[in-house]
Picture 1 (cartoon, rainbow, N blue to C red):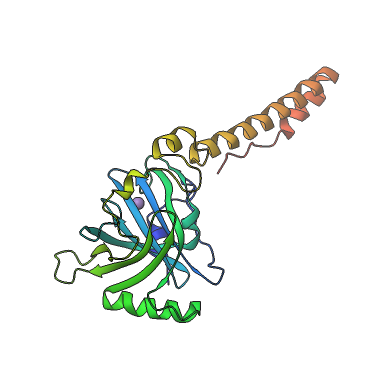
Picture 2 (picture 1 turned 90 degrees about the vertical axis):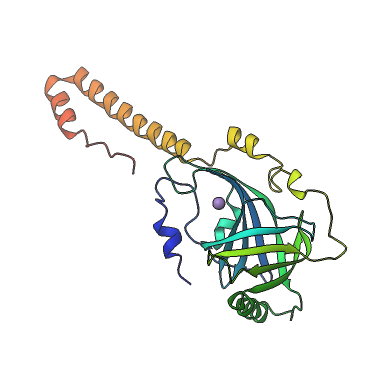
Length: 244
Ligand code: MN
């Protein structure tokens, strides 16, 4: 399963988003990220065959079986993306703030107890356009279905629907608006996150400046001894490397 499209859309020297990662453990993971991009949406991601099958859900998931939430299938994301929380800088694909709104494990409605077998069954469901799962998250619990709208104008359109079970609720689950990892809202994350490309650049810059300062000191020291040695020191001053 290639992440070609995912990688094509991003410049990894400019964004702190992950490039890959390997699935581990005996369970299948899911994540729902709240993403304050051009339009606020929720990214619903299910681990399958080592990557995250992904849907953008404009209104976010619902625990009310009456709600059928539009879920637009997007490109597979790398497994490590499930832990990503931070800021995608301006000018990059999906620029904006991301929090881990919910996370946990999931399985098919009839789990076999074998991850590989479960994955195979889920991939078959995905292909057929109807994925039925049991979710074990902090906010999302119980049975959910993802159903492909085959007659829709858009080939990527699916519906995310909560099944009727003891976890079904009429209250709006998106009102629980904090990250399950940090306890911060999107706004708080935007203000406090250090996972920003800009801050990485600042750190690199200061290291670069430090290097320049050190070189400068060496030159002055040399100048204090003799003019000749100073000249040599200047000549020997290595061309400073620009941060990549
Ligand atoms: Mn998104």
